[in-house]
Image: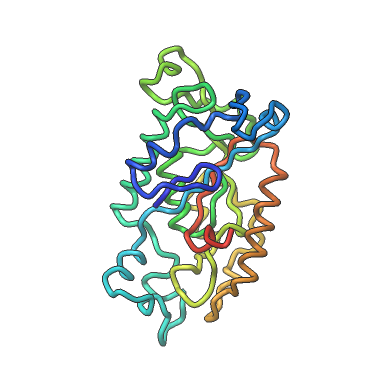
Length: 254
């Protein structure tokens, strides 16, 4: 489980709190050797990549020492107990800990870190991770100025009565895990998942059923191309501060 600023990452709470400081580069001109100019500073998009928290499939592979437990065997993949695996209680706690960390992590001239947009893979474990980190999403189609969200409780901004709109949480198939072979990387039908995550915006997912999962693993070149296309899509977004909740193998293909 890690939280990465731009394209970095941190493997623990300790390293996360040290490596994630002083990221407000888009708000000021850096030192001469920083590589940033005032022109670039005004046009910088900041993307934080968040790998999902611990899932039951992670526990099972650690216990058995192999990924064979993720093969479907003689049953249909969607009947396997690890199909579209969920978070463990430990995983939920990891996500909640990150939520608490962001509430006190300075960024953008505030005492906390907030996002304009959260993009999330449609697999259950990433959706659960996003829910426990960011909480209630902004209602799809609702402008930020109508959202009743407040700054994190106890923060200076909260005491001053400052508002902090909840982020829109947008589900995109392009940032899902490398698909195929392992049952944990298939997904349930969107018609079922959406009931569990009200307020998440599924409007840009094309198919109800998982049309991508097969017994064959998605090829490296295809996953690389998909990752590049996703980055290009991110670059076209109007938001300046975005969180992406995704998966380890997908991140390795970025």
